[in-house]
Image (tube, rainbow over all chains, first blue to last red; front, side):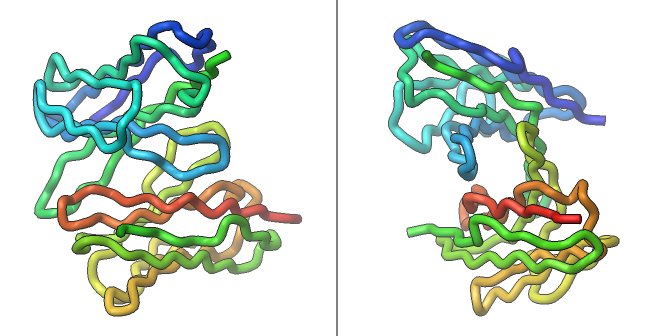
Length: 114
Length: 109
């Protein structure tokens, strides 16, 4: 069966510090991978998605970046965090099957920037 | 532009029925998803509709009208554990999910 891991679960970082969040998927090959951010009480904002190694699409301009060094690894990074980067970060994967594209979410990382 | 609308919050009584509505406008359409999200947790999949009509899964049912750009999630025999946010998401022509802000459902005894 497929599983998705995210770490860390919670993180408190000062403004201006760097960030690295990691996501790995097991039990599937060549998944689509996604990074979302969810502000408190709000919906999901798609930040990045990837359809393959080294292929990253950015949905919103920001001080974040993403990389996919391996098929089942997706990394979210920042060189200098802003207060507005606080939120709940979710990694998700999907495999398209005739247009059906259910996304499965990792447990999330709660980031607080102080 | 692309847009998903759903109520911000709803309140219902344990044992009752509640219907959560969602309207969508997307560039193309490849299906409508409902997810459940408990506070502090990741969303979990509930249902998927791509054809008009009602899909039933135990206590939960989801309805879609493509011509009206409308869906609803129906929850029957409400239990306290159903207290959560319910997220509506429509898949556009690029197979990307456009997410609503979620409906917070409060269940009262």
